[in-house]
Length: 322
Image 1 (cartoon, rainbow, N blue to C red):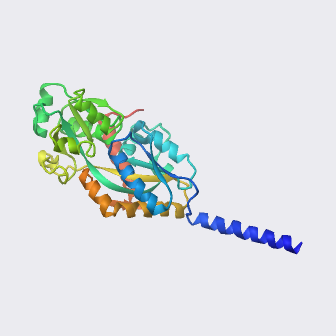
Image 2 (cartoon, rainbow, N blue to C red):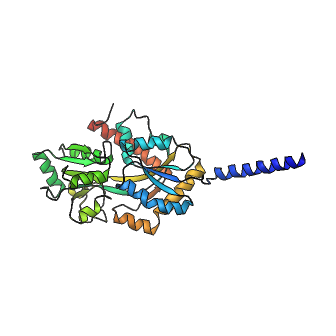
Image 3 (cartoon, one colour):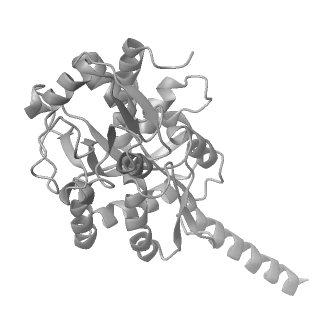
């Protein structure tokens, strides 16, 4: 009996040690999925793919990218929110998910409630790009052209930040109406523009940088306060008649709301370390991203503020669902 008691005691000790290790964020024996809200080729997808290999090294755990497009992040957000809170399901989203939530109040999804923010990295401009033969080279010329004939623009989908940019900047501020053509993602909108299916595209910079630099597309404006380092010849909206205008699209990482703090902290630390890696920073710059990163608490506060901001814009524009 004494021997059995000692064996049982040893087993209990091992179980306690394993439980303590898990509580401290030790990884389960399965890959980490970065669930991206858009199809391959856009800004969030580019960040996820750049980060995956480096995160694998940081975590000592395989990190894979899984694209789950639809509803500007609500579909992927619900999937990750319902996943096991073990640190193996990470949503890679943008403020397009904030806008989509505002536009679809009955979706049953709340980014700030259902998920825990880990941090955001690599904000990027939205760029308005046109076919080279479009008879407008500046934003003011574009507004003038839109007053003479009805133009259309493609975006990464209804409820995305680029979609709302068209409504807010051109419709509410410049006073012209363009027809919106939703695409599954930014790369697909750019492909539509190259194929002459649309007049303009409003997209994040990553899929457009090389095409604008090579003259295959015309860059009209970028929305950040400063010109994009990768496209120094493309002016900002602020330089084009709207002083003070600035809008960036961030790429954020999120886990299920019930994820234990040590598990979330481990992932947050890995993400921020990758964001500071010189090789990653150089690649992000080439794609038109900015080199700013923030932690989860700051991202959460920013999302709460953005929800209020976009609620006001959507209400004024009348583009949300009831």
